[in-house]
Length: 212
Image (tube, rainbow, N blue to C red):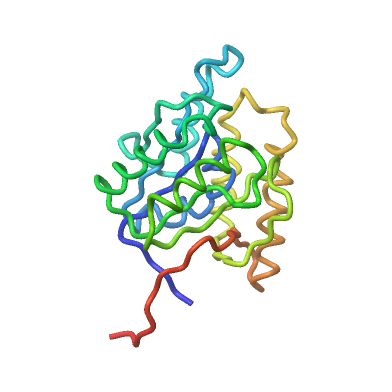
């Protein structure tokens, strides 16, 4: 199956989420379509994470994403459940302004309170639009990819290089390059391809038709 979006929206709760879940795919499509990457919290209220905002920008640069296509939201980490209405309204404005036709957000299998809250609100705000869920390995339980997207060895390497920009998280197991590569090898095996990124299907909206 071939799929395409003229405008693709990537939604993450915190710096690093989008790259962990979708980095190889972003590198694969960044020159083919218009994308926007929105991270709801910049984590700057935590003094131990003061560098992650700049690291996120460097990481996205490795993937080929221009800085003007990167947005940080105004929300505070770990209290998203208390801000559901504000997040919903933020997404509704984003829908009006950007008009995406394909959206990537956290998997419904993610137990982090911020991740799960924003996915719930994204499904409300973007009704009638295809939504796919990505895996953040440290907080997903029971995730299984039912939507597999082939990526190249170059895309895989760029994802690894992008995550290496996070000096703050250098010692975290989920930033290990071998783990990152092995996940894409596994997803590739499920798709009978060398490498793939995997997503769960939160909503598919499409039409069946012949190619012109």
